[in-house]
Structure formats: C-alpha cells, structure tokens
Image 1 (tube, one colour):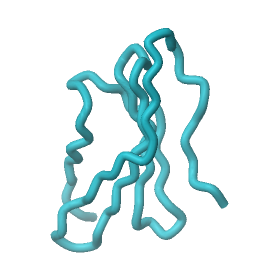
Image 2: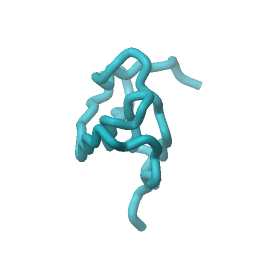
Image 3: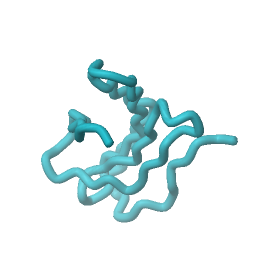
Length: 79
C-alpha cells in the first residue's frame, strides 16, 4: 500500500462529498462536493501523481442555487 494523502478542496469545513470516481487509468479522481445544504456544489478533478509529488485539485464546474435543497445528479467519467 501507500501513504494516505489529504486533499485541500477549499470550500467550508463541513462540506459533503456526494460522490467520487477514479478515472479508468487511475491517474485522476473526480469529486462531487457541496456545502451541507447543497447551495454551492462543485465538480473537482484531482490529478494524482505517482510518487511524492502533491496532488493537484482543479474545480471544473460550480453551481450556486440558494433555493436548492437536494443533490439530483451524480458525477461520473464519460466512456
């Protein structure tokens, strides 16, 4: 095995991870993250290098909706 790597995702302390999935080659991780009330949701991709280099987190999409109360979609890699 290898050591645990913590990720700095930004956002708030109590953000929720709604979903995640490894890319087919295992080099990236896609995350579906939001605040606890699903008012600010974002899709983030983490480039996970082999070895000691730190992971790189990129935000691809953000959605802000003050009226939203639930997560109605899931994140996944396209075939």
